[in-house]
Each structure stands twice: as C-alpha cells, then as structure tokens.
Image (cartoon, rainbow, N blue to C red; front, side):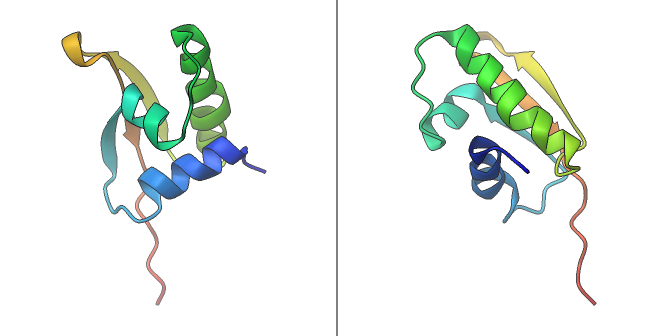
Length: 87
C-alpha cells in the first residue's frame, strides 16, 4: 500500500502524463503536495523515503536521482515506465 503522499504525488505528476522521463523541482513538489516543513533535510527525507522509494518499490517509477541545479535548487529526475494501453 502506498503512503498518502506517494498517492498524491502519483496523481499530481505521473498519472495523466505520457512522459518516460521528467524532472521536478523540489519546491514544486512541496507546493503541490502541501509539504510545509521548513527544515530542508526533513523535506528531502519525506520526498525520498515516503514518496519516491514507495513508488519505485511498486513499479510506478523505475528510478529517481536527486540533482542540484544552481539557483533553482534541488530537482528530482524520474524514469517512468511506459503506460500500457488497453486493447
């Protein structure tokens, strides 16, 4: 069973998207999922351990990588499996 944050992330960013790769800024994740922890280390832990790892374990994302991009801060690069089409 996915955590509520992982379910919300999947609905917000992946479900209605046909991309197989995407990059999402940590601030965007924070705003859309209403994660208001001011401690950056706690926020990173929440995103990685409560959202991205469960999604990877359930096969909803293939992998993720944390990237630090200058002024824009932290981004997460996701590899997403291709969606199966119903015949």
